[in-house]
Image (cartoon, rainbow, N blue to C red; front, side, top):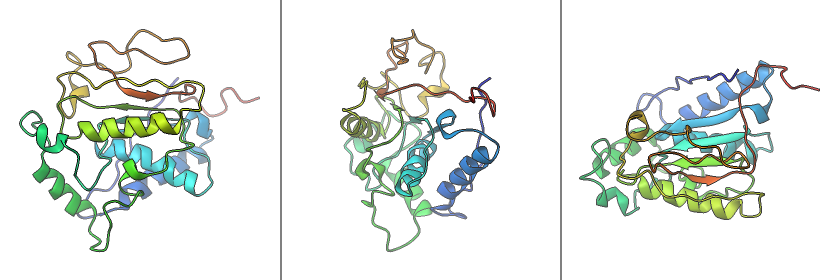
Length: 225
């Protein structure tokens, strides 16, 4: 039966970057110690959690270690320079985030005065995404971070173009940040199964996708030869 481990990672400003990423990696290594295989672990999150969901496999891959078997990133913040057009274009539509709040959050999270906001370890839109596991990115059409999600989706499509399957979709229509908390409006992951494990989502909530295979969480030892 699939299980979920929800990581109560430390928060900024009391605990600036990279405390949150360290906590995610600690949780991942704990799962490995419990007998879960990397291919049976999925890395998922929303907002900054959606960013960490991608940062974790990137960091593990850079160290030559096995990554989780799949990534689900919802409304990730991928460009810490805050230069994408949707930041200002959707300010009147997104009631949760704005340029001002993003600048406030960035200052609380990235406190090292020498930090370079274009650093690919921080702005994952600039990272080398080659070799990431099957990944899906969801974002809302009217959210401040819409272009962040779209940019990451395009980069993923390029990175996995040589893989067995590549799918690209548009954003969740008329949706702002945290749209997935409105199941009456936009549902994620409850659509008609698509051949090869890719799912069509209802209510026009269509994510950016780059799938090569599917993955699920299992009990330790399940499926071992």
